[in-house]
Length: 248
Image (tube, rainbow, N blue to C red; front, side, top):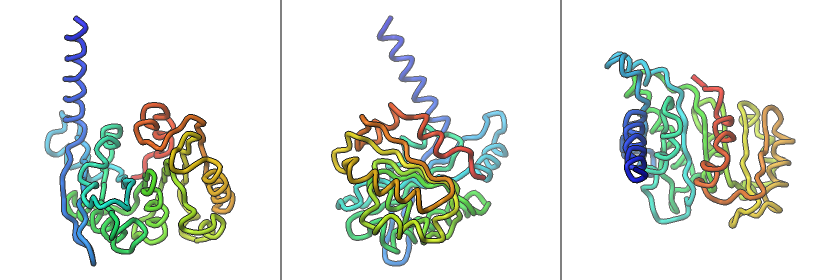
């Protein structure tokens, strides 16, 4: 009986995942690079048929996922990196481009690739993408900051997990940039982060929030790890709160 219940649960999860989001794999071309990109489309109400699906795609908020490990030699992470996040938010279009050692998130090429991916989404759903939410973990958090500075779209909500922005400069100087003053900022930081110790990261984030003004908040978990799975399993409400309300 226990085995049968577990099997039913696995089948249910598989069906829900299939219904909620269907990933596409794209090779996005931008000046100076090609970026392996995954796009997860929301499913419309099944009773809406094809028209409901098109309407769901055209009206759905768009979230850009910035993966970590941008200094690795794996230049195709974006194909799969956003999948887990997309399953949590079936009403969003999730876009996950790729960065790696030669074209990391702080380069103009990688940022241009993100906008090229968003251009592709706009063309395919036949509706512009004027505003996006940004989510980044580890090195991907630098992508959130850099896209906020250089990207073509307006930013609604930002979520930065297990991040350390000091490589971009002093927090007060980074926060002084006018383009960073609008939209929401949410930082999730952990006391058990093996790469970015809290003693180093918290002062930078606190200074950033103090100087950027507006809606900026740090949520700290003393047991938090440098791991997306930890945040998803233990602080899911923090994640959901960070990207709500939706940004059409």
